[in-house]
Length: 271
Image (cartoon, rainbow, N blue to C red):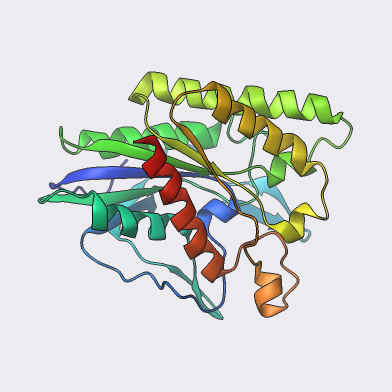
C-alpha cells in the first residue's frame, strides 16, 4: 500500500536487481546528487532485506503485502558518508534533457542486495518480482498521465556464485531463461520500455570466472529482444580500490555516477 500520493504527472524510472542496483558506492564523487523536488523516490517504509543469523545472511525478511512511501530522492548514508546510486545520476540526466514542464521524475527503488534468481527472489511469482509489480501498479495508479520511461536492471553476481554444481552452459541457459521471462512478463503487463542492464566490477570478475555465463546470457537477451541496452562497466573502480576496504563487489560512489551516465547513454540509443 502506498502511504502517500503525488498529484503531479510522473515519468517513472524503475530500478531493480541486487546491491549494485541498490547502490553501495562509498567515497568522494565528481557528480554528487543534489536533491530536488523534480526527482522523487518510492521505497519501502522499512528497510528489511535479510536478517542476520550466525553471521550469515540466510533468512529473507521481505514479505508481501508491503507499504511504500514517496519522498524527495536522496543518497543514503553510512557511518562513513553518503552512499551512491547510479539510478539517481540517470534520473538527473533524464530530468535535464527529457522532463516536460509540469511533470516530475519518480525512481522506484526495488533493488535489494544479495538477491537473484538462484534463491527464489526474482522469478515469476516470487516475492521481489511481485513487490516490483505492486510498486509499479501503485505508482501508475496515482495519476492517469503517469508513465514508465525506463527499467534499469543490475543483477547477476548472485547467480554467478550460487549453484556451483551446474555447468557454464547450464548457468547461461538458466539465467537467460529467468531474465528473459521476467522481461517478457513485465512488458506484457506494462508495455515495452527501454530495459537496460549493466556489467560487473573488473575486480570481482577477475575472481569469479562464472560471471561470463551470466554476462553472455544478458548479451544474448540484448541481441534477441527489442529495446534492450547494456551499459559497459569496464574500468570502473570498486570500493576496495578507492578505500582499501576489501569490498570488490561494489562500485565506488564515483564509479556509480559514471555508470549512471553509461546507462543513460544506452537509454538514448533506444528511444
